[in-house]
Each structure stands twice: as structure tokens, then as C-alpha cells.
Image (cartoon, rainbow, N blue to C red; front, side, top):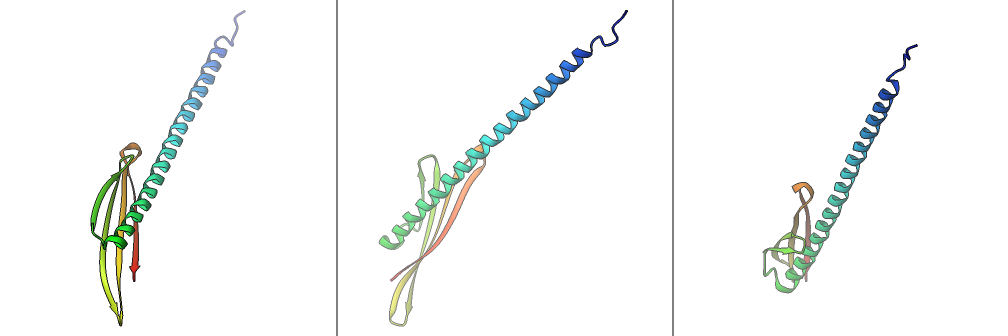
Length: 128
């Protein structure tokens, strides 16, 4: 007598292997996406804090040196470029004289997958 189920186990094993391969590729893609997302978040945070550092530098320059470097560009470690602008405006109100500084700082860095991370901060400082 001939067995009618001959080859059924081979097809079952092939389907199970296909399922395992599909699950493995999904997990690999998911892991890669998660790693890219984490790396991008870290680089954006670095850029944000670099912008805050640049803003602190610009405030110091404005208050101590009267915007001696109105358009400054410098590079921090890890290739973060800082561009800072400073504008001074002398104001007289009655008998009181003061200076208002308008500051803009932009931090830029090349991030994951050749995208650009940037963070821009604005601040107005009044010096009596």
C-alpha cells in the first residue's frame, strides 16, 4: 500500500522555516531602526546642549565685550558648528540709559544617515 501523506512533513518543515526566517528579518529590521532612533536622539540632544553652550558664550561676549564679535562661528568637539549673532541697541528712556542685546545661536551637526541635526536659540539681554 502506498502512503498518501508522503512529502507532507517536508512542506510543513519548509513553512516553519519560512516563518522563522520572516520573524528573524523582522527582528533585525526592528533592532536596526531602534538603534538608529537612539543614535539620532543622542545626537540631537548633543546639538541642543551645544546651542545652550554657544548661547552662554554669546551672553558673556555681549555683557563683557559689547558684542565684540557680532557674527561668530566656531566648532566644538564632535564636529558641532556654532553660529552666533549679536546685535546691540543703545536705548535711552528719560534719564536711564541701557543696552539691549539680541542674540541668536544655531548649533548644527551632521547626524545619522547624513541628516542634519540643528537647534536654534534666541535670547534678549538687557544691560543697565
